[in-house]
View 1 (tube, rainbow, N blue to C red):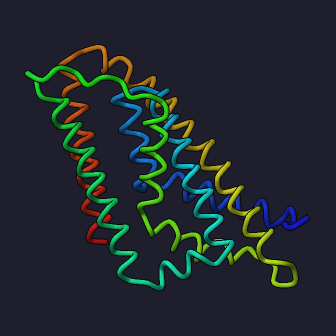
View 2 (view 1 turned 45 degrees about the vertical axis):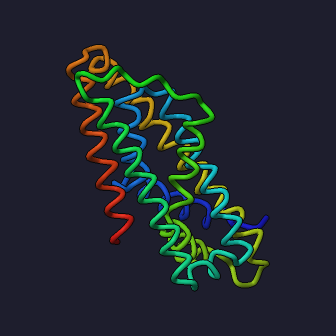
Length: 204
């Protein structure tokens, strides 16, 4: 067994606390659930978790350290991620215009891709994994199986927490989404949040 029970419990506890703390991913899920419903947000959550799996593999194989050691590559990823979030912010703002027809619901695959890109375009996730996961690795055992197990635990915990946020916020926003005026306000708020995430990613 790559991880002891004590390590698992300690790591899951830390993961839960981190997942409950406000951050770009859970704020993104919250706004998606409020404006588009729980089902849409859950597909975004699956995309985010897919991105976390990729980050786990990169850290386990040592590729994340190479990326983070290349400043121009990090900056390129950050810029692309910020531009993508700005594009989403503009689309949300336009959807909130009174004279503009409501945007058509996105397909599950499009929502999933949105979550994947949202996660992978943030190099801070790789940096976070590089800082967190090794602290729970037993140096007397092979590192890669432990890193993969820790990343999988992080992913499952994130899936549960973010899924709960999606369901709760989706039900909370159902009443608001049935009223066009409130829906426009939600779209505008979502646009501002997305723009803030873009600027935070760009200038962090």
